[in-house]
Amino acid sequence: MEKNSKKKRRTGSGEEAGTETAGRRLYQMEYSSPIGALTLISDSEALLSLEFEQKRYPFSLPERCQLTVLPGYSGNREGGEGRKMLPAPLLQAARWLDCYFSGKSPDFLPPLKPEGSPFRRRVWEELLRIPCGTTVTYGSIAKKLAEEEGRPHMSAQAVGGAVGHNPIGIIIPCHRVVGADGSLTGFGGGIETKKALLELERAEY
Image (cartoon, rainbow, N blue to C red; front, side):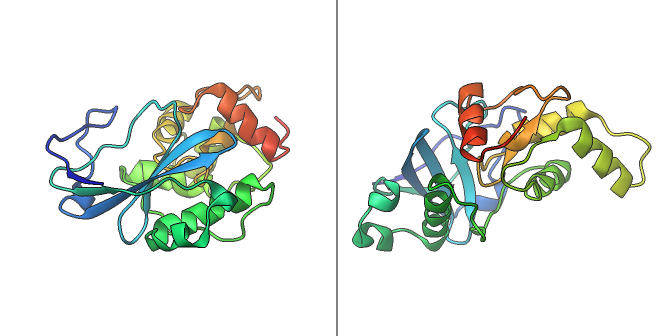
């Protein structure tokens, strides 16, 4: 199924999104996981979005894009023919998720291209450095980034905003960020989903 988007959608911050993907062909696939359906969107080069059924900031399709909706993918149960239909970024993301939900820590990353401000992208890069099975606080990320940039202070709230706008859930592991007291605060996919992911990783928090 293919459709052209006619209306520009906006992010939760009110900023127009998708300028880098305008005019491109995008691909959407639903991945059936133990925590519910996950919606993945990519272009021909990289993964742009991984959304939970519950979402705070839905991915904004760019104007004039061509969106091709592909058949659903049910993890390791999917046959080889179904996998052959997937663009390379979606296939690699699906394989990553297969490995992750089997209880293993993937030793590779699919190509990722999250869209956001330079500050948000810097925070998302830091999230990728959090090892599977561990957690960090918003404050510790803020302190680390401030030190790297030679700044006396950085707001944990600003970091929290960037974490909350992460467009590629699970793979960019925003679920591994917790409150200063270890509480499972603010997660776009819902607190129960965050808890389930941390339990899958056997993380202490």
